[in-house]
Image 1 (tube, one colour):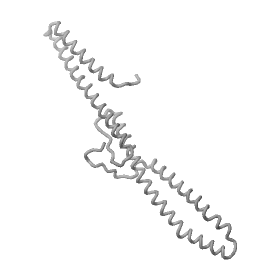
Image 2 (spheres, rainbow, N blue to C red):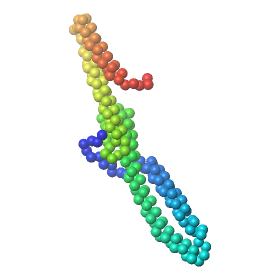
Image 3 (tube, one colour):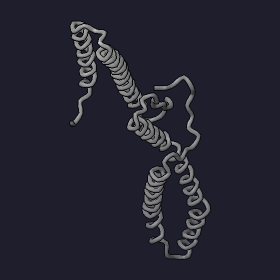
Image 4 (cartoon, rainbow, N blue to C red):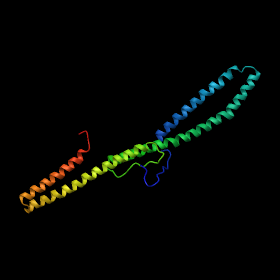
Length: 196
């Protein structure tokens, strides 16, 4: 769910450990791929070059490899590394946000919602997650409201009993009302399935 304010992440390395691992794996595979490809391309030529012209051709290949191919590969690795960081922050940023919101929920805070940018991964999950938080918030609000009414009714009943102001019929009526509210609270609580 996208809020009314535009949400921009200011740090691209939002989970340095996870993004760093991902970056290193991508770079490792790119280097491995480059080494294998270079071996496949240049090894046959190196093995067949034995005479003077072959050695000259070999030196040209080495020069080409050292001054053209390797810098290009290095530049490509840098560009891929930057791309990996940009892509992974669109994935790890939402994960960090989900962790933060779930920690808030565990502490009883149902007021925050997951805000993601429109191109972030997990956007569809954030909408369902926010829907869940809204339902929880509404149910807890209902329970709190009914608890307040129940508490007020019990206090009034206790005061009237102490003062002797209520006939027995009114006391029974108040107890029935309290039982009705208690059943409503029980119904709201039973909405949640738990392990206990």
